[in-house]
Length: 87
Image 1 (spheres, rainbow, N blue to C red):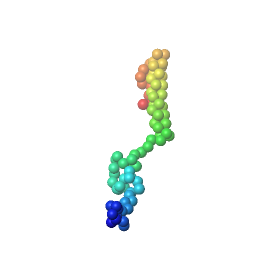
Image 2: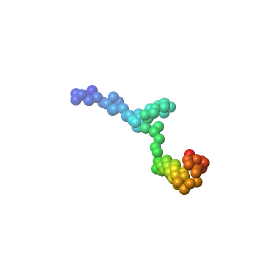
Image 3: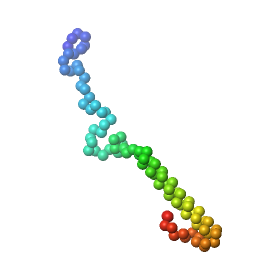
Image 4: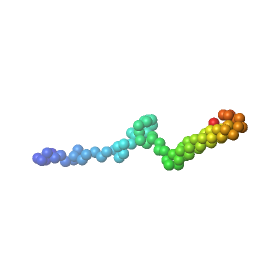
């Protein structure tokens, strides 16, 4: 030890952080639901697929409703049972 309050030797150097990624999961075998690496991202293709599916189902339901209304109005007597199997 010198008179300035500094120590020489291996104790004066701070230890490097053994984990270069401080936000990484310290135990990869542990199932941590809050760990960012376990999150799944919805990509553009998946989101468009879900949107198309919902809109296509709505289109089919609207077409079925319109067809039953028009056929009933024209006197075909089908009423609500078209039997098209659309849902």
